[in-house]
Length: 85
Image 1 (cartoon, rainbow, N blue to C red):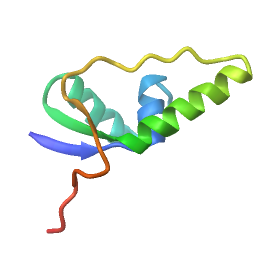
Image 2 (spheres, rainbow, N blue to C red; image 1 turned 30 degrees about the vertical axis):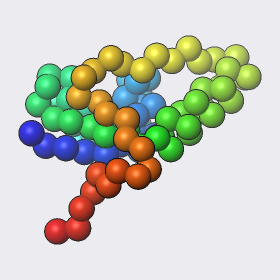
Image 3 (tube, rainbow, N blue to C red; image 1 turned 120 degrees about the vertical axis):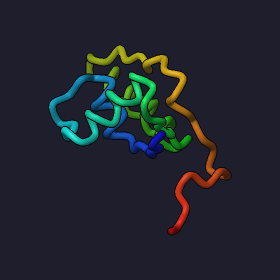
Image 4 (cartoon, helix red, strand yellow; image 1 turned 90 degrees about the horizontal axis):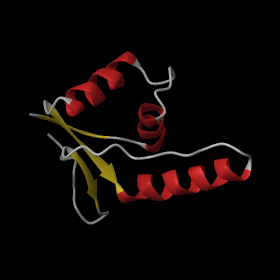
């Protein structure tokens, strides 16, 4: 199973079904939805996501829900998710 790390924009664009998400990233999120890949979400991405959602709600839009997928993992800053090869 392939493993990936997402950033804030990719995660939000996936949640919002934005056309800004690249075809490659779209495929990776689709594979995760189909239990064929695993995506790690760094905790800072959650912090940034909350910030952006709060900021968006102040200007009148945003009701965003994180997808429930057992292969999306939130990882703390103390857990290495990328290793040099």
